[in-house]
Length: 209
Image 1 (tube, rainbow, N blue to C red):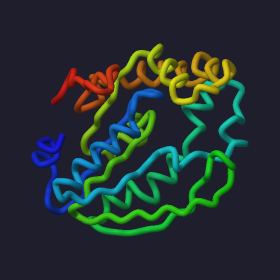
Image 2 (image 1 turned 180 degrees about the vertical axis):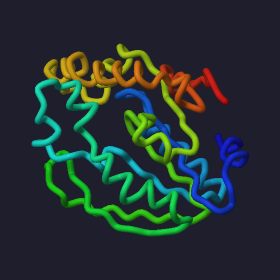
Image 3 (image 1 turned 60 degrees about the vertical axis):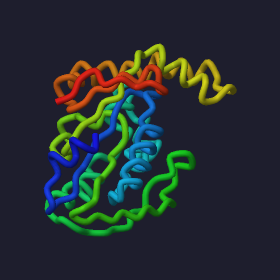
Image 4 (image 1 turned 30 degrees about the vertical axis):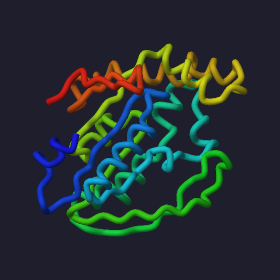
């Protein structure tokens, strides 16, 4: 990945890497490991987590279809484009503070600081990242691939107290939304690198360009 960055990044602009995958694919851990590696190589990084840009619960659950709500209503994509991604394309350096939603409490009380310059490698992590609204702002796209059943298995492993009601959400909400996304934006068509992360201790590059 660092070789790809060095080959593609110019000296004048930040470089945005999108790290995406279905729920439970290992995006957060992979991104953390990549950031740690880049920092060890004296790279400057800045993390953008899509989960920090959740819409309020009243809006997220306004529609009748859970899968459609998750796909189209969960995240304030306009805000992340306006305040971060578009400005990144227009300027080679800027800093900002944003107050974002704590989706656990449904209150806007988390302050996030973002700082970029021409040397920054931006790690943008989240679901549905390579959709048409966000894709133009991402310089290199990495998709972590796992089967749907592995997604549910990991949900159970993350929290041994997880209820069957929560697991049913995977069948009725999360995975149908992911299926819709994958049909519209197949990873081999949209991503620069596809990594099989089913065995997260031994990830395998399936496709790279």
